[in-house]
Image (cartoon, rainbow, N blue to C red; front, side, top):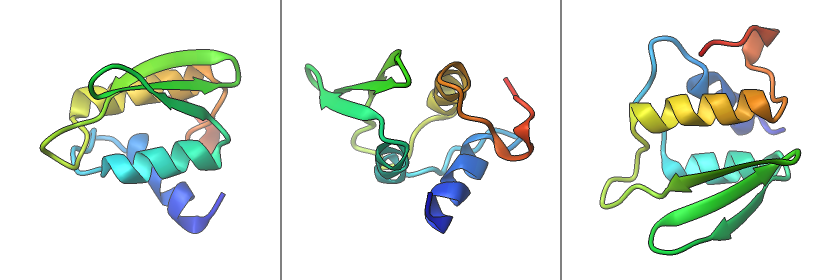
Length: 91
């Protein structure tokens, strides 16, 4: 992972939950993890990582993901075996 990917991982698992993470950065981060991303209907994006599946909605017209999506992304990453910084899961 690049330095930027590590930064995004830290932002996803930051406490308190952040609301200023750009969707484009999340997509790049997931791609760096070799997740399979496919477009669904509307603004849906299907993600498969290590056999774990999730569906996220690309935010629009905003560019940043919501706090709720950050929490969902955390749960998805933990289920897929991606460790947060320090290795301790925050839910």
